[in-house]
Length: 430
Image (cartoon, rainbow, N blue to C red; front, side, top):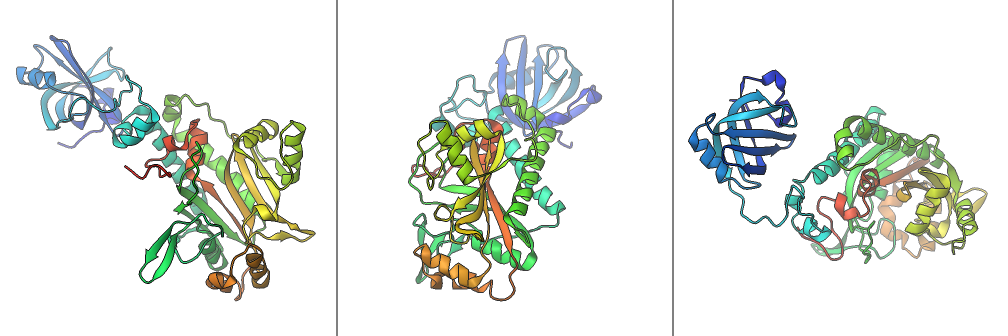
């Protein structure tokens, strides 16, 4: 018999025999009438074993079931006023495929709440909760919508390397590893490679892990991140912001359309950000914070608290553009009228930076100059600089942090909650 998933068990199947498989979400043994709630990837179905209606062997099996036992059930679909779905299954056969040890270290029903460390230590059990299924259902929708948007707009997906020979963006935030007779590093960004893709394929995107050896322990920080990156040839940074704005709106609309149930589980009221997004300069942002009494000077970066404050001033989604050159990487294109300012931008969404981008330097001589100014050696970037010696158009791009965007859409306060297997300074397992 072909297996049915729980979402397929509807009133149209009343009177018909079905086969379902899954985990015991809950079991209530009341003597004359016993209930099992079975969970599979799509939801829940009630199995009702009533004395006199089912074989005694079925009652015996049900009486010995525990939470998270894996079972297979054959039975007849019946209407039920008591069951949430309006239908239940009268079991004719129950097979126990796998027994769960008791007691469980984490209750997937969340009758007994678990703290964050317990959720992280017993990740696979927490994945079975409604909350986790909602979070990662939404994250899956974000990824799907991101890919869909750029496929529909003629972009090509590329796969950048994770092992690299030199720093992508400079600085000391690199994980070093031995690589045969050489030193290598885990990529802190796909930056250099996506630019090489753009100067050949014109429009590229990718979803890739990146690694930052920063010794932070903040609710918004991870050492391994999934980035959603885009690079566009023949585009300045204003056009890159256009693409980013449209992509975010498309993603939020997709979540609203396809993940209503998950948003309800998380008690989130999601709205599509109002377009066009405001585009304020870095200088305007500094002055706005100073006006609010914040202690910040021109040249400083914004703290997370200051990003939230800016969100209160400028709205749910807005860009901060035209940054001081010392705040951005060596590849950011200087402005023609003031080379101390670069064509760079951040996107703040719900009070948190979720994306940053720039127009890139595509002129080899200027790129070499900027690399030296950052205290780096152009020889370490020869392959990258050479990519712009043979016909390189102006190009711009950006990246969205998948986990940060998931956190903001799901209304969570700690990025570890929305990361399947978070990697931080203190955590490399499970």
